[in-house]
Structure formats: structure tokens, C-alpha cells
Amino acid sequence: MLDRYNRKINYLRISVTDRCNLRCTYCMPAEGVKLMKHEEILRFDEIIATVKYAASQGVNKIRITGGEPLVKKGIVELVAMIAQIDGITDFGMTTNGVFLDKYAKQLKDAGLHRVNISLDTMDADKFKAITRVGNIEDVFRGIEAAKNAGLTPIKINCVIKKSHDEPDAVEVAKFCKENDLQIRYIHEMNLETGDFSIVEGGTGGHCAICNRLRLTANGDIMPCLFSNLKFNIRELGIEEAFAQALMLKPKSGHIQTEAKFYNIGG
Image (cartoon, rainbow, N blue to C red; front, top):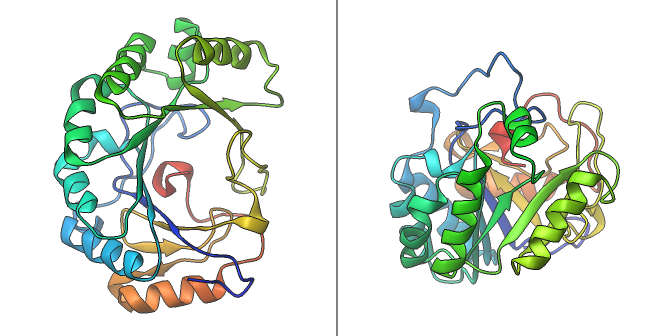
């Protein structure tokens, strides 16, 4: 698939839930969030139909996101179904890592290739402050389980405020080097003001070569994280939703005022 700016779209990010077991300060407000109703959430057969259509149009890269995808009931079964779709050659998941100790081997056996794990600090107290409820030891166990299961290469997503030279980022980088992990620095973003930049160590945020569309948990195909454009597969049908998202995908991001990180998937 090519958009109107001749960018090859071969990457679909799928948010399977807006729920999360953590409450990270840069993702969720302290008072919590209004969650989608159960009937609004896509069924697995709807997700599979969407991925099959996307694959038929040239999408070969899938990433499962959330919320936190490992709180989704039946997530291993969904992974297994997606893994069987012809044409998918790069199949990953972004997770906070807390439940990977339980699910890593099951996910690998189901067909998942690799994981990105969020880790912004090596300090247990700071981790608790950032996530409001998290225990950093759960993440360390999850990383080890992912390594043992072969969900590699493991990429660590480290959110930074201004620079990768910040003390916490430096410590995370050291941890990654010592444990054969790849680090990606993600500058803290603001959807409503349009503050974003290119991911250091990745391609996210590089509008000129953007190759992705997003499927939200309630069925919206979103052509850009920093845009209010969305095209619902239930309302329009899968083919038409893709067609409109492709046709109207903006040249670059601007602002997003109708959704949040926790329900788009970042």
C-alpha cells in the first residue's frame, strides 16, 4: 500500500485493550480514565479479519499494544491466530513487562517473534513513583523470561524528558549493554500540543518515512498518532476504513485532542 505521499505502508499497530495494570504518570491521569465498554471492544474475529485484509494489501509487520496487552483475556490465543496469517514476517508486542514472567514462553510458542519492554529507570523507588503502583523486580523477571523464551531481540523503551544523558536513561543504557538488550529513547510527548520527535534508535516520529497505521481497541483505523483522523471498521467496513485512512494519512503529525496514549497504543 502506498499513501498519497508515496510512503509504503506495511506496518499495523493493534491496540487490543485500553486497560493497564500500571498508571504511568505520562500516560494516565492520577484520577484514572474512562474505559471503553465491553461491547465497544473488537472481538478476536474482527481483529483477525482486519489483519488478514492488511496482509493481503502488503502489511507484513504487526505490533500488539494496549493499554497493556498482557491484561487482555485470551491474548495468547489471539497471538497464535495472528501468527498463522500468511505474509506476517515481523510480529512483536509492546508491554510493560510485569506479566512476561508468566506469559513469555506461551507467547513464543504461540508465534510471537519479539517484545519491546518499557523501562524508564533502574531505581525501584522512582519506578514506583512513575508507575504509581509498579514493582521494578517484576519487570526484571519479565525481561529474563523473555530472553529465556527467545523473544529477541528485546528492545527497551526508555522515556526521556530532554536527553539520553539524563541520569536515569544512562543507567538504563548501562543495564541494556550488560544484558544484551537494545535501547530506544522516546522523548516524552504531548498529544494535545503536538510535541513529538524521532525515536532515538528507531523510526517512530519520522513523518517522512512513516510506514504505519493503527487499529484501536474499538475498531478505529488511525493514520497518524498526532491526528484526530479515524475510520471505524465496523461503521465503514474494513476495506473502506483502510482506503480512507490511506488516502487521508497526513504528511506529518500535528495534534491529537480526541484520544490518549493509553487507548491508542503509542
